Length: 137
Length: 136
Ligand SMILES: Nc1ncnc2c1ncn2[C@@H]1O[C@H](COP(=O)(O)OP(=O)(O)O)[C@@H](O)[C@H]1O
Ligand SMILES: [Mg+2]
Image 1 (cartoon, chains in turn yellow, red):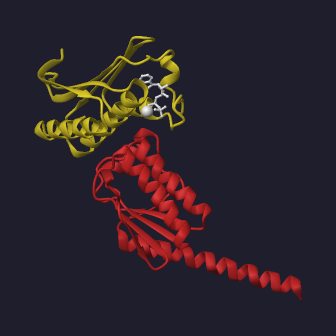
Image 2 (cartoon, protein in one colour):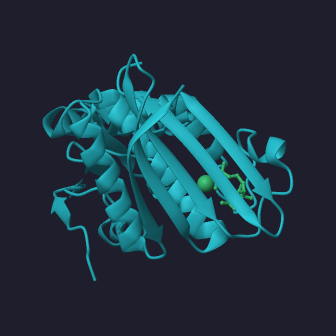
Image 3 (cartoon, rainbow over the protein chains, first blue to last red):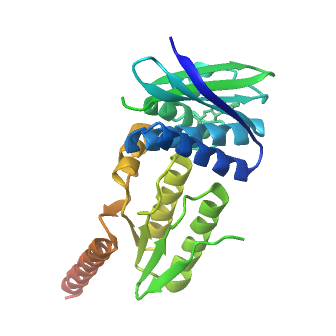
């Protein structure tokens, strides 16, 4: 059981919104006393997913939640866009796969940096990526 | 428009990144730095990222690009002061910054650059003697 303790949604359309969102994640991570390395992993993951949303879907929304598993607290981030969607998720999750001539590390790298990773996408409808990072662990 | 200053110190260029880079700033830095290396014929580039708390795949690629472009123009790149949390995250992300030299701080980075350049010059001297021998 994962309980949501607080929730905050940010519209991400401009580059300033990306900077603002990353700062917000940092604030929340500090507030729940997340360790420094975990903070860095989480904000780096957020940076990758925010960039994808801007680049492939012209923006979207990011929800920041403080969650509790009973034993420990963490942060759940949900990135939702109404972009073109991803036709082959398995391919998109491969290291080095990119339709944007970049490194293709954003999705697979993010998965390695967080504790929980979920991606759902429908072509023509959009993409939602949800990640959780626990404060310790 | 925001710009990251590039300092010239003899044969080296020094860039101190004071803020977490957003994409446009990073792209500007890449092109400015490559132009400067070309214009000044710098032998080394020192990038101080000790104040940077996040390096994602985009920024990592830019650092890699700066290093490989500089190499083509005969300059070495050393990244100094990478925070341990950033180094760990980059490895997990899958981006070990191949071909980029790293050092603990600016002073050690300078020493590393100097030693790399000395080595190159020794190599050149060596080439010369070999040529001389062939000429004889
Ligand atoms: N939000 C998104 N909407 C549509 N396509 C996406 C989205 N995020 C990722 N993709 C697709 O997945 C591919 C892999 O993404 P990623 O691993 O971040 O690497 P990169 O961004 O370097 O291409 C992208 O090239 C793109 O085709
Ligand atoms: Mg990406």
